[in-house]
Image (cartoon, rainbow, N blue to C red):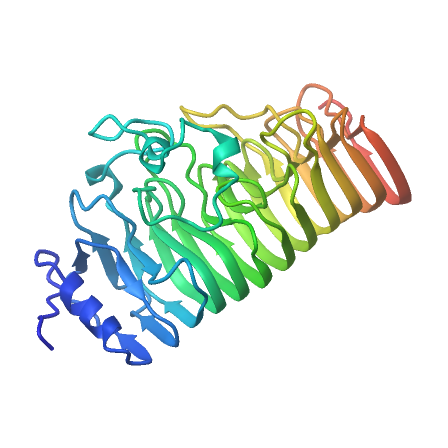
Amino acid sequence: MSYLLYGDGVHDDYPAIQELLDSGICEVFLPAPLKNYVISKTLKIHSNQTLRLPRFAVIRLADHANCEMIENDDFDHFSENISIDGGIWDMNHSAQWPNPYHFPDENGLYWFDKMGFKHRDFTMLATMNTLSHKAYTGHCMRFCRIRRFIIKNITIRNPVVYGVQMAHIEDFDVRDILFEYTEGSPKLWNMDGIHIEGYCKNGTVTNLKGACHDDLLAITADDSLYGPIENILVDGIFAEGSHSAIRLLSHGFPVKNITIRNVYGSYYVYCIGLTKYHGGEEERGAMENIVIENVFACSCEGTVDVPGGKYPLIWVQKGVDVDGLSISNLHREEKKNPTPLLRVDNGATVKNMRLRDIYQKNELSVALPFLQLNGEVEVTIEENLQNHSEIT
């Protein structure tokens, strides 16, 4: 090797790690560091390659690096067979530029300006067909255009924006991820855990733990990169005091064949949202075959930056059309906020809604709404709905 691998928490380990990745070896294993690894630039991983660290070895972004920690090397052509396994990935967020989507960086420029867009110009954003290397995004990890992708056994610590952003990913497995999000950059918002963008399909997301200060898991067909999303199994989310567990988002491209099961914890905005978020009145969210089962959750207090108690636990937003929604074994014992258990907004439509084994217990001193089906809703199955909503 031309470069030394230090792992002393002081010297830059980026040249040595990138040299190993560029060598083409199929597995790059970083041994336990004396203290922690430091990287000053974004690591680039290639096709047919695994980067593996000991589970609790820390790899930290250098002060003022102002970049993502790792990406695949080519966002414009498909890579294959990439795996990230192990490590505590510490973005060292307080020493990076702040959230570029909401706050100017030290040059006074927004991410959108660097891309040639006006700030939050969603019409222009919809023209993008890939994620871009051109601008600092504040995400810890980004991956685009990969077939057969695995990320597992990692901790993500205090990113500036999202933990992991994925687009155009096919046949993927995200599992055993822990989020340590304790500080904002500069506010506790816009800090998703796993953010799945357009053209992702055929994937599993399992065993996510820890509170995030936006969606712990976002499955978004019309957000940063627009395109359909399909065939995803989500199994196992565990969080206390998180903004939300899962957001599905569409205002044009479809989100279909999504199964969500085994969700636990407390959430201060909502637990599961089927949302449109933005887009014109003429644009409609399109979702199909959504299954939600085994949810044991309630609401909780918000943070200094985002108050709690505004939205229902399960929410179908105005402007969303759902063809096939099954909700079963939903259990809520509410101690904090008198929000509905389930609400379908006026202006939303749900065909073939199946409701089974839904239980709510009120531990508040005020009335607790149960089911508010305000939109155009076709309920085809309604079994064992128990609302113990007496005021305590």
